[in-house]
Length: 260
Image (tube, rainbow, N blue to C red; front, top):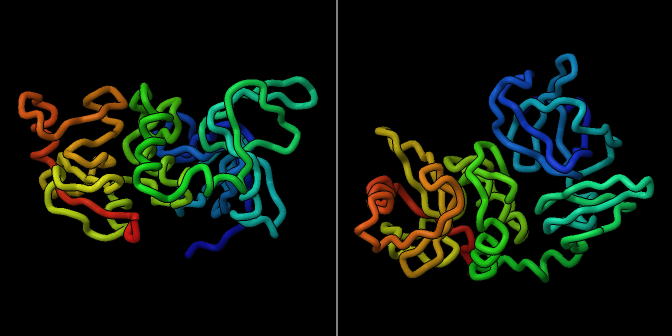
């Protein structure tokens, strides 16, 4: 494993993670305010970082602040968590904070909602019904945005990762990585239980390219490029060509909540 040079924390509401150390390269993910990441390499004003989900990419130093070596990824676990809010600091500056961002101690919530980190497990239990409710409540209306992880714009695996994180479960970032977690669930997506992850591929080699969350009863919720973003699908709707395509591209399912 690559040696860690030092640690940084994101100090902006959203920080872009790039494929290469240049702003014109592809965004591959995002880290939100308060997230701590390991710096693996530096190049001019760029850091190659590894986030809490072990995902690696390049981030500009303008997004971050250096933190003490003793800082751990759990050291901010009791910080307030945005559920989508606008805050102000003592100087009067306002910030729009997305779902999942950590607030600083001096920020005051002006609109929207935030919770104390110690309340997260109570308000967002690791239960299938609670997870699917959060996916529908917080991501309804979200546009598809490659590399995004918030209701301001997200991709399929970004929705899945963010919703499960809200309920205390850290998943990997990309759909193909998430397909290695949990245990095999069912062979047909129509038979999947609520909270199961459903994986699809549009490639000949069946490399996973898409993920959705089963709602049970033959339904799923996802962020899909083919829908432009958020959608709930009925997998028994044979009249819908998009649904037929989904069923043709189904590869596997995984159950993350193995004790649920």
